[in-house]
Length: 112
Image (cartoon, rainbow, N blue to C red; front, side, top):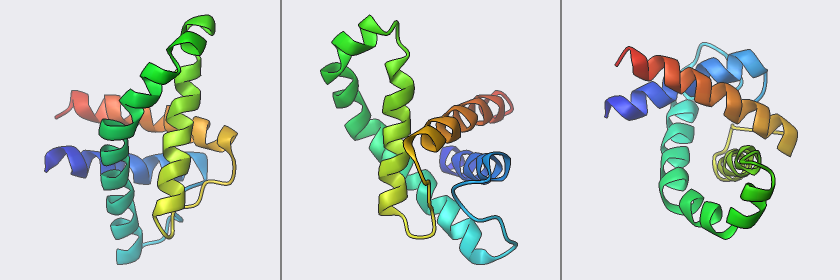
């Protein structure tokens, strides 16, 4: 439960920093959208992401691991297509959002 709350806070902070994703307004809908994004990202990251990492292993090795950023961006784009109210306009913005989200998650998990 605490994991999802930390992810929800991280989604809100990342949306504020990157100016994409969940529109930041003081409303219940913003919090619920961020919570739904956190849940969808958790499910996608634990089910689909390992399969994509295995399938794309040759290109990941060829790019010295940088293709992992693309996979993370694709996971964010997938969540963007699933969750209403969460909009990421391009793959590049999704990669930027996922990098910021990863850093924020790391910082918040240090204080867990």
